Amino acid sequence: MAILLKNISTAVTFNNQNDILSNTDILIEENQISSIGKNITAPIGTEIIDCTNLIALPGFVNTHHHLYQTLFRGIQEVQEMPLFPWLIGLYEFWKHITPEAVYYGAMVGFSELLRTGCTTTMDHHYVFPENQPATLIDEQIKAAAEIGIRFHATRGSMSLGKSLGGLPPDTVVQKEEVILKDSERLINTYHDTRRFSMQRIALAPCSPFSVTKELMIETRKLARKKNVMLHTHLAETKDEENFCLEKFGRRPVELMADMEWTGSDVWFAHVIHINDEEMKLLDGAGVAHCPSSNMKLSSGICPTSELLDAGVKLSIAVDGSASNDGSNMWEEIRRAYLLNHLKYGSNGLNAYEILKMATRGGAEVLGRNDIGILQEGMAADIVLFDLDDIAYAGSHDPLVSMVTCGNSSLVKMTIVNGKMVVKDGKLLTIDTHKTGKQAHKVATDLVEFQRSHS
Image 1 (cartoon, rainbow, N blue to C red):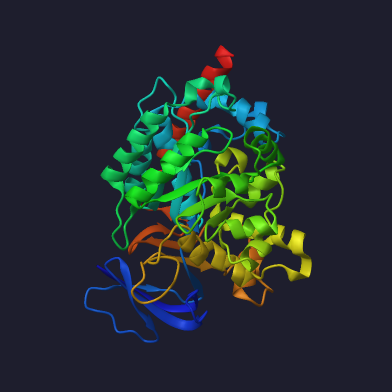
Image 2: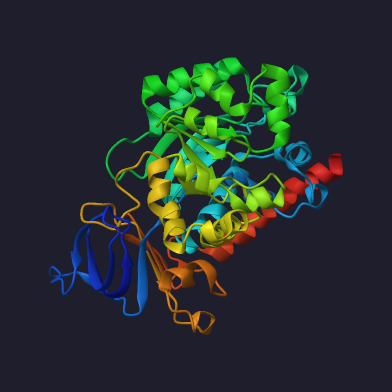
């Protein structure tokens, strides 16, 4: 199957030459870009799509999420709270999640991501209630395959419950041998290292305040034995910093370095409270910048420009929907731009640099060299945007328009692995109305159950 995207008004490649092409074509054959240029002659049987007045970018890459949280948005009991009390309140709801809830939570999150230009996402699932099957991540993987998104599932974990001085209730933590065994099962079953793979696995203990130091070390050993990546939350709040100083006598980044949890096979979410010396300690690790979550939970502002200046790989992420409260990747890019300018003023990153973080930057953070760039031989993960709306009238730069203007975040087209998944803002792979209604019912039942038993 071949697709020819004809007469693209502007194609932003994010290649090594930073090429921005005008009035160009992109030929997709199977799951990769086979040709970019003017007046491409398509093979017989090719589907030709007129892209006049459209802008093409590589698909956005979301590097931090908690998909199950899409079912726990707008819960009144936890609004207007910082991270620690917010978590403590939500654990009481999350302890009731089921495989069905994980599946529908994933479907809701994937739907919003795809419709707002995201073609690759990860998820950080770390809640495993004691009375539920341990195969909750398998439900996410099933949902990703059905909806058609490129997916990096991370096997999250919590082993440090309240009884041992941690934050989560004991009912949602697991024994370390159980965590490690299931981590190895998921890698052996699902991790696909091939070029253009749609499914990869990483290992992701939740945070320094919900796992033991021993689990962090054993997880690192397993990940490097199996050649998979590592992920966790880091330096998100002052509360976390104080916890680490009191429990370990080290600041969060120092603790990671002590445990050999740095390097190019590691990426961290948030990384707000970090100094110049600690940036060097990251030693090639990546960062997922989560602007909306950081603002809503009053966590602080990620030092994005300093991180880039220090050579840190930087990406953009939506974070969990209960702290965002959405999975809108296009909007997250806008907020990353605005938050950067709030912190750095006229020295802030420009629209091109922010969009590069959301595409090629995300690919690099996830350790991928086959996505994030519009180039021959790269994956056919392409998003097309239509700026032909009065909300963009009077703007003289298409990239600035994408980042700062508009009344909608729904894209014209999303192509993942060579397949059209979204057209005119509508998902082609699932019935979003039916899925949304069922997801909301599951969510309502879970929340009302907790409220009736509290």
